[in-house]
Image 1 (cartoon, rainbow, N blue to C red):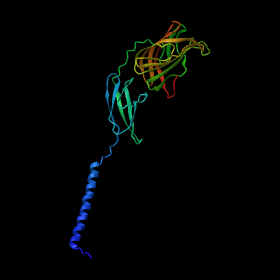
Image 2 (image 1 turned 180 degrees about the vertical axis):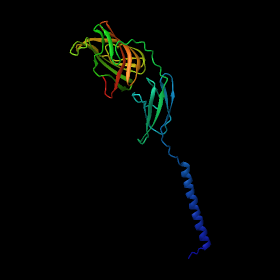
Image 3 (image 1 turned 90 degrees about the vertical axis):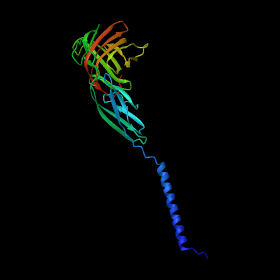
Length: 276
């Protein structure tokens, strides 16, 4: 029968316990060495005012998967990390940056900016009609618009920019029972005030010039019947915003005639519906 000295037994147990302790410490140390703390997700941005109403936005967000910018002026949202945006008029705007984490959770930050360096075009147009009325001079007459089919100019968000839709009608007399009428439809996108000249490629209705688009020229109608096609449009935008738009227009027709128009502070109505 084996006999153990009590001192030897105590020493063995002590050495065994010490080995277990040091082994556990090594495991903890290895885990600590390999531990990567979780990166907190946050969303933030800073901005810099540039020339003539343009603002640059620098994204400071971390550990997020996608972005969505709202510029506060009824324009299509941007989804790039950093972005730049041109405002049409001075004023206060709430800019929001939304982001999504890989888990799908959403974060956002909102800041107020104050655009004050947007330069206004010199308005030399001699308006023949009162505000919120479209003036048109043509062989049909020198007239102020009787009404708009829309009730106002429609403004819609478009990926290319601000999309304005005009549909105005004119009568020779103020008599609402007068059936003799001239009307036209114009739908265009602009991103800045200035001068634009749209000439259609072939018989298409879509034009592109100077970062502006004429989506639909329509035709000129008289008494409900197609009169002539529009061949070229020269457009000057003096002022454009979410509330109103002012400028002048020259419409060249396929029969060689030209119509001259101007409009001051036409009321703008925002819509989410698809335009013409």
